[in-house]
Image (tube, rainbow, N blue to C red):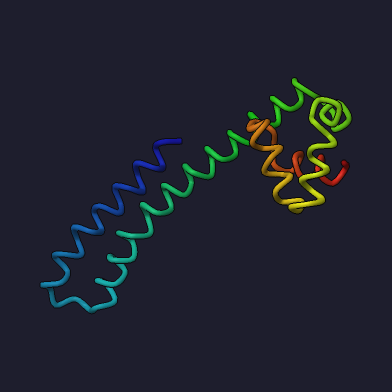
Length: 120
């Protein structure tokens, strides 16, 4: 997992260093541009990949918590303040009701919170 991240960062740093030497060389500008693009793109891809993996792990953890704590939307509906959430949904809109559900149950997956608000 971290091997690819380290490799991409290394490529980016080497490309950055090469960019400085290529500015003073007689090579075509396309080589300099390629080096500059690599010096930016490789670290961005590396960090994007790590962020994506962390997001997927967090979503899996939320799904596991929901399955263990409630298991179904009916059990969740009985555990929350239905009339209060309906009032928020009707007065302020469904987005505010979903925010309130997420405020009360931060580990609840977003799609389940949306389904709950729609089901009320």
